[in-house]
Image (cartoon, rainbow, N blue to C red; front, side):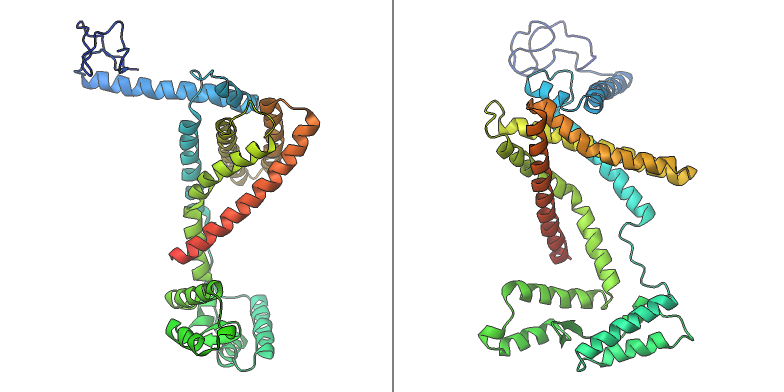
Length: 356
């Protein structure tokens, strides 16, 4: 709402209709003075922010204290006092991912150290792995023997990067390839029944491409894939919204009073609560790391277990069914929701690989 003084003239500057009151009943534009001072513009900005905050904190209060209440109120048409679910989802998800990626940069969620020297125990484990590989595939011996000799030479430190220096071949299904062209040539010479299928061929070609791109260093390659996947995580969660709502629609198919849009609103507010709860868990963990008090670890675990409990109460309050029916549908929702997330994660992970 603008805090500019109302115009004396009663013609709408947008559509020309005679205005009765502050707003035009045809187009909705406010009939206010068009010239604003810088101070007036600043006040307008502040008032709009406070108005947003007022609705946000009013919604937040009931979202945290009365599971399912805000979604029920919104679906019943009592909407003016609450922030629109899509607007609140965009705001809370933006804050969540800003904090999430800041923490990632600080703590290195996907950091894979390839230049750090291996410990004595790591050397022994790698030697054992290479010897087992050689026993299974004696023909592919050159690079494994070189790695074993590096690891056995305890006079100099060896890192994962050192182990892969100089390797120009990539092993796929017990066969070594130095390039995509070599792979395609070998595949072309095989009879139809022995050629790799489309899926295996696509993965093999991409593996060879990435191995060359990252100098055959699997740690660096997986780090790049992890980074690419994490930056697509917001899109994955957003795409999961309609699937989550669809599962609810199927579970409550006999509840004719609920439309798909009602399930979508329920889903939006649940995701909003999830973002806020995760932010609280991040904050509690950060306090625990700072103060070194074990009580914060316990509190973080309790907050995590609050998540499914909240969803169960939320479903019971919103849909109004008995405790037993709600519990059964709660378990089905979690199973189908987890399956959906696994499938979406696999899709986005593969997509991240092929986008590198």
